[in-house]
Image 1: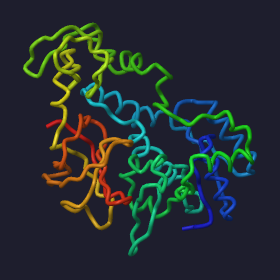
Image 2: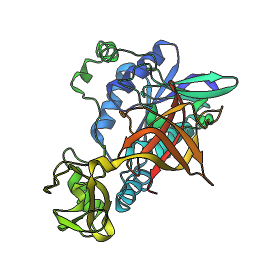
Image 3: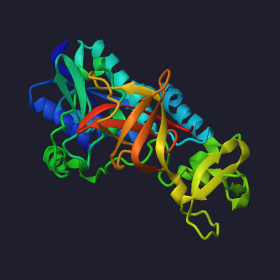
Length: 347
């Protein structure tokens, strides 16, 4: 492997530009790659400008059809099952890192890099994924699935950044044109403030989106809802149901156009079913002695794992977890080291 040549995912944003700049400053031959997932000319032009300013080679990889099949279609299918899938996880797992690896392999067997906030460490001949030193920027939750073959050639130039202003100041001194750029938030293929409309048209287009019933866990009708695309498990706002107890969404059932409600206190669970389990750590996943998260910014819980046949497991939490959402990831940690993860399912 050519360890002085790096293929970096270049989005035209501050983090990827700063990563490319740091690699270039360290003496790497840097080649930028921009993925055209959504025919986003603005993104491509911004990345091209960064590459020109830094005088690095730049390529655009067309991947719209693949992105549709491996990210958007899977996202839609998850919602049609009443789940809450994570598109960033789908993209990292099915698209971004594999495309970078493949491009690097045919271009001098190079290293790869991204602007993610995480860290790769080598220990006893194997590679470990660690959370960023900056907990406010850490993105390791979305990367638990990365394989040894990818980790072994992967660089995260921003892994040691602890100040949220450090990267911005560094790159804006070189590229003041990026000053107006904002940190990417939300889902890239859903227009800003258009989440409900996207779900109505793309997800539930062939299913009822007219008003339906709110029901309790016994099936008793509690009232009417304006359309299931407005609701997600754990939601407490916008229900419009009078009750002496605070209610929350337990489940969305597209097949019957119903939204199941229960008292919020009943959303807390000590047992969480996980499927598609991935063991990230070369040392394996112990039965106890780990923590886990059910969302990127969520609390870390202590627990134990009960392995089931195949790729399933039950995670037993020491304290109840509020509304673990089917379709989201549950990720295991030991300190900052990522041990693995899986997808939350219903019992």
